Amino acid sequence: MMNPNQQPPRPRMSPPRVQLVAQDAHVPQDAARVWLSRLGGTSLPADQTANRAYVERRLSKKGGVLAVHQLPNLSWVVWQKEQGSDLGGRVAQNEHARAKQMEALRQMGGQLQKALQAEEVETLWLTGDAEADEILALVEGLGLAAYRFRTYLKSPEKPPVDLTEIQICSAGSAGLHQGAVDELSALWEAVYTARDWVNEPNSYLSAPQFAKEVLRWSTQTGFHAEIFHKKQIESLKMGGLLAVNKGSVQPPVFMVLEWKPEWPQGTKSDEQKPIVLVGKGVVYDTGGLSLKPTPGSMDSMKCDMAGAAAVAATIGAAARMRLPVHLIGLIPATDNRPSGEAYAPGDVITISDGTTVEVLNTDAEGRLILADALHYAKKYEPQLVVDLATLTGSAVLAIGSQGAVVMGTAEDATIDAFEQSGLAVHERLAPFPLWDEYGEMLKSHIADLKNIGGREAGAITAGKFLQHFTDYPWVHIDIAGPAFLDSESSYRGKHGTGFGVRLLLHFLKRYTQ
Ligand SMILES: [Zn+2]
Image (cartoon, rainbow, N blue to C red; front, side, top):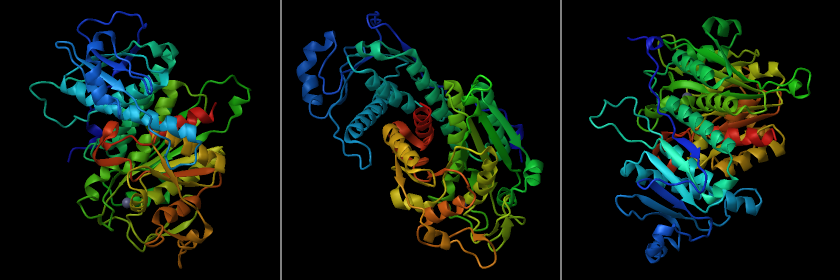
């Protein structure tokens, strides 16, 4: 068997480059162009006025993306219509309407990307009279939709043509700054990276290989990363991580990531307590001895480190954007497999804080490795801890892949802010309760806790289990539903979505303002 540690790094796809061009700049004659009209507007480029009746017939009701090519020139028109404000959340109505509008634009960006790909467009010029945030949303969707995971395809005779450049040359771009465009590029880079990691199979991405990838990402973006190997994990007595790893051929790793902006020594910001992000890094989950079935279950379990991917990707983006917030990332990583050595149902293990856990199902492993990480987080006296985990099938049964489940002990304002960020970037959150009674379901006769609650309220009992290891304001986000999609969904694509990166970045940017 080839040691995954020996494998060379994979080639990765880069997101398109975006450039702001003066609005009176000359658009080359043969350029592929898209015209984006402002919300409710029905404007057309000067050379398309003859086509007005046709465009109105197709777009005046619902809006959308329409090809209006005058060959050999390729052109598209995008009109947007009011989306209404019903989002089923708890945010002010006007915010709802805008959030829904932005999402419609991202999805039209996804649609446009398909059209560009069919026409093999490499460089796109964006013109029109839309507002700055409307332009950004369309372009965001376009760039996210351009992602492909082609690592394992034999090189084709004709290499695929990807969109590599977007030139924004629009009246509305007067309100656009290079900074906003740079942030969008950093966000794309982070989402692409998270998706790459999720899409990489375990035959490449073992826990040690994941650590190597994160180290490379840290040098690329400028944050600090330290990897604890098995010896250090043993000396820290991380009994959850070690138990889950027992059946594996590959050793576990525990990653400690840090982004700390340069504040002048002795200033108030210099004393700021960090926000700790914790990500579940089960690089592959067979369920262990409580083995999963294959179809629709074990076959996609390379995605069980999507929380870890989102955390590491976000810290890289925060470093790129030089966000004024001190961030720590904690990632316990291992695979979970049956073997002669594997931990077994009935075992009692000891987490690093001394809590004993009766393991009744080895497939409820995520909470065991997270317990060690959440305990480790205490040493930072954090102002807030947020964990992201593909934790429970129960969360998927409850709300499907349309969003993630959120719960926690942080104050309402913090959870509300997360919900608002979720609506703004369309990585939506559904709040679940952490009532005391759910904790009763985790009582064991022979240990402090058992690792499963029962048939009911599985997402919540998993949350209650985690809560036991926290003594700080804490938010838990169960991303089991939206982290990995079996069928294509607009700009989210198929398979790894990078869910959580855009949510965390939006939250952190607002939190630090
Ligand atoms: Zn599992």
